[in-house]
Length: 440
Image (tube, rainbow, N blue to C red; front, side):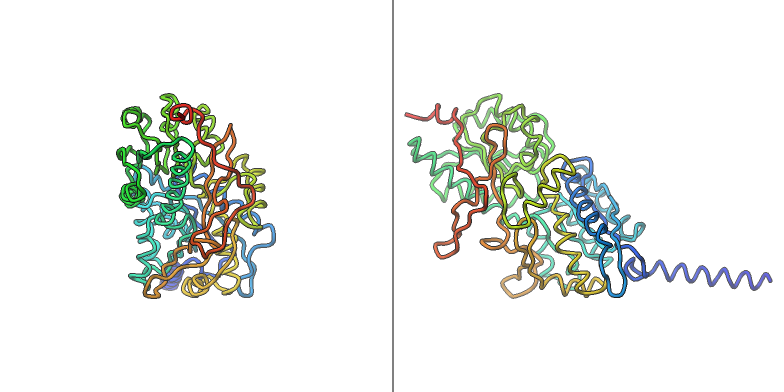
């Protein structure tokens, strides 16, 4: 009997080891586990979670996904990456999702430095990771450089920072021309304010070149901490520089004190570019109304429809969570429009088969049409196509307590490309105190 008991113990241990050695999708589970990773104590992570919850609930309410011969519901696993403060925490959070929680997929990630580390871990385990926050081009360049290892990575939102920069430069040239034309300012001075973060480094250098190439004068470049709470030193220097435009490259919480303190100083300059905090409904209250006339690139805006899917998502999100979605809420699109149809089409959770389907699909989300790019040599990048008919993003301006869509509005990328105007666009307004300062 003792020998029999020992034998059964050995067999049981062998079964357990064998089971643990398989990925979660290969165990015949009845649920599809999706890890949602992000800085959950911040609005960016909250957006990750809310978008994912909304998508999963909609899919599960319909009975789940048809995977081959069985219906499978989605189970979300929440992981706080703490990536604003510690990259190691982010890497550990990803490791736990995969090895302890046994997720089939991961969506989310925000800070590029952290996402690069998280990406490596997901790739080692051959887990499909769709980014919903980090914009650095290197994340997708890795796919082209080492496809077999990095093919499980896809960008979901936003598009590459190279294209985010292009949208910001469109803002810059448009406003510069308005100031020159209406206020007779012969040469526009531009102050660049860019947070100290990897994703912003390349854009900052490019902005410095673009400003001078477009015939403007660079008043200076300032690089505050992404989590700075006092930027009066930088703003005082900008005020002394006589800048007409403040070009912001801000994705983190510094965007709030920057705008509030700029308003308190009444700096006669137009703020435009990227300020992710300005995408939030609460920004007006957080800045005590000092954000009036501030512009930022964004993804969603009340009353603006990029396509036929936009309104239903935005209205549904506001009804459920009581606020506008930010771009990290693109986890909704990633699950509802990217993963779910791909899984049903492939009829499996096998990551290699899913990659082959997903990278060749063209599909609409709540914001755009998704088509994955290839590099100059025809190698897959798993990066988003940017331009008319595909992803463009949009630009909003705070006008008297409300976000208003101002771009794309009668925009043509080239003289031969189609004109793009999204439903709900309004004209840009120059702050009255800027007009008062420079009108002659």
